[in-house]
Image 1 (cartoon, rainbow, N blue to C red):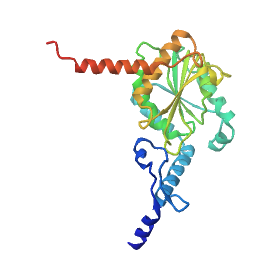
Image 2: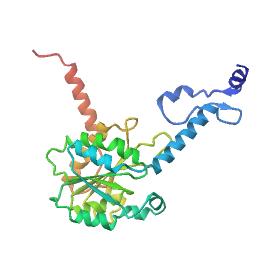
Image 3: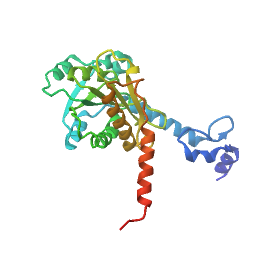
Image 4: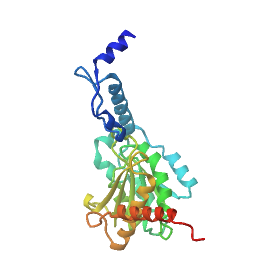
Length: 270
């Protein structure tokens, strides 16, 4: 008891502590002398360990294929030229191109040239790909009933540009990379979406559109699907992605929500 009382006596609270309810950012943690209090310090160490684990945790590709097929998707499996996680982390260039075995397998895949191909990639957080990709795919596929959608490609040891290699071989008009983002200290399971029109090896980042922080605590699956559908529709119409394609989906979503609210509030004419 005396030790607890002494610890509380030396703990100085931050006057901004009330703001912590609005953000996961590490603000207003208090102070004990010149150091952080023990609780916030231990929480920081835990978050750091979770972020490191997310980078090194392997993607369970077999389970992902099984879940995708259970949801009605056909699948293909590929691997980058990085033979393992150590090479992947040290040689980003290897993660941007397919292994020879995967290249041959895709070239032999007998599928009609699709309008869009979705690639689920481990990236820097396999747990993000495993947790967020299927709910997102379910949400966006409902909006793409008139699209020719190719098989979902599951890619291991993958960087964003691997989608260019995949898309070029499959002759797809658009490729969508669903890839685990670099883990943050409060977001080890955040998914990124990268959309590229006319993918081919050598595409620059300026030719892509990106939607980031897809997770329940960030951008929800439904909101991400809304944005992705908007970008896909306009990319197909304009024949481009990247800096020439502006995301104006937020205004449309606000209008839809406003119309829905008005309809609910309106008195029943009957």
